Image 1: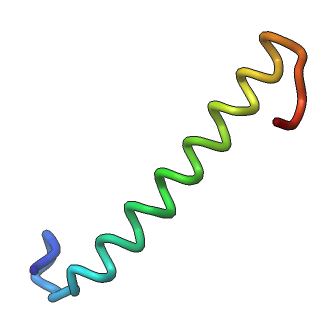
Image 2 (image 1 turned 180 degrees about the vertical axis):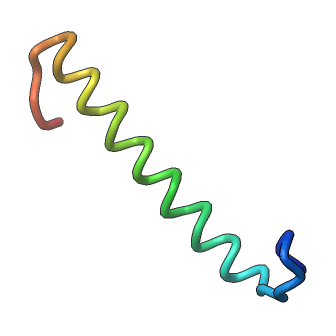
Length: 42
């Protein structure tokens, strides 16, 4: 797999990055939910 600048990257690197981004966004969504409903933790 090639990046836009022609550097080759592995599928593993892409998957790890996607998992990291997904986790980060889930954390942000949880913070927003806490602000809306006032509940913290699960």
